[in-house]
Amino acid sequence: MAANGVRIRRRLPLGAAVFTHLTAPRAPLAPLVGRMGEGRAERRAMPVDPQDYKQGMRRLGASVCIITTRRPDGSRNGLTATAVCSLSADPPMLLACLNRSSNSFAAVAESGVFAVNVLSLQDAGVADRFAGVRPAAEKFQAGDWIQRHTGAPILATGLAAFDCVVERVVEAGTHGILLGAVRDVVLGEPGKAPLLYAEGAYGGFSAELAELLVS
Image (cartoon, rainbow, N blue to C red):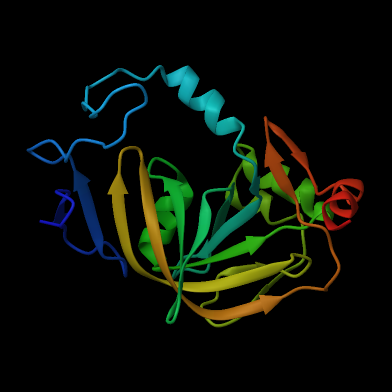
């Protein structure tokens, strides 16, 4: 039992990954403090409209990445994702969230390795290809792919790539949270603009806005 009341149940390893599962706490968490308009907060269960949640998350701008892996038989798989973030600098670790129903999640679970490829604006076409529903082999027909420490595919034109070994997978809702130990970092050509995603569309930083913020 974690300190915050969240139960963590270990499961048998699948491939090279260690799986855990988050379950709801039996007792409610401590009440929130400082609720607007009241002297004390009350924690009440209120239903969240799934469409409101999805619309809200669409407004969360994020860097576009392609998460890739290579199975022991040499076959490659991957998908476009934005749910990626740094976890630790020492040791270097990151996390990425994948839908557990996806073929890519199953491939990562089997291989125990994955790479997070951070895309530049010029990689938008590759991002579209990996976001679509098509055979995995066809996805890799776009882009220039190399490999490093783990063998997971790395996009040569990307801004950066993090070559990872799966330390653990935490199952939460529909997704699996991959905790990756970074074994290698590949830095792309400097000066490229990052590929961003928000409101269902790709975009980038505005040079005019950047100048305004600096001035």
